Amino acid sequence: MRLQDAVPQPGSQKRKRRVGRGIAAGQGASCGFGMRGQKSRSGRPTRPGFEGGQMPLYRRIPKLKHFPLINRQQYTIINVDDLANLPKGMEVNLAALIEAGIVTADDGPLKVLGDGELAVALTVKAAAFTATAKQKIEAAGGTCELLP
Image (cartoon, rainbow, N blue to C red; front, side):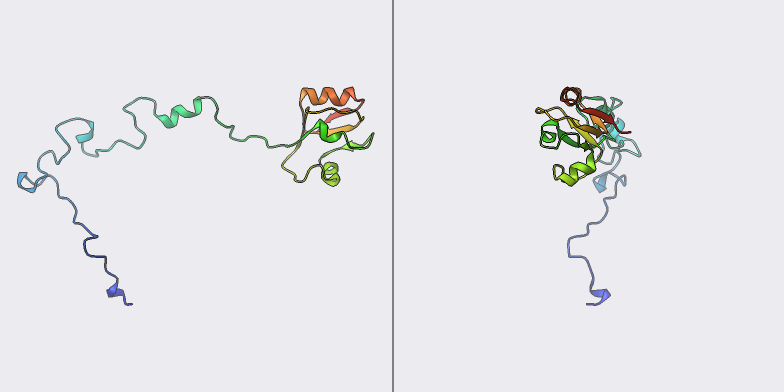
């Protein structure tokens, strides 16, 4: 194949429509844009998303509910129930849980949730605790330490 052989398919290229060149050309005077108004002016189209002065959708949306937080904190979560099988007096943190095989991946700082029951006194070091988790750990005789 040579450079002179690279030509467009027949019928794929159409000539540009010449508007405003008289009534005989078919698109004279108003050039197919109607009589008057915003859509007939030069520099014609409004910008994408323009709604005639009404607050456009792309500016209304984030004000509404149920939109995700931009820089949401991702936690490695664990329930109080998962701590029940650990030995008494153990110091529980993310590294210890991964070593014990309770947590398989480090998805961020550790957060303890309050689902389940706990009967073992543990020292739990985590970035966050729910109110019920803290209550259940302390009721079992353990302590909760917040990490920065």
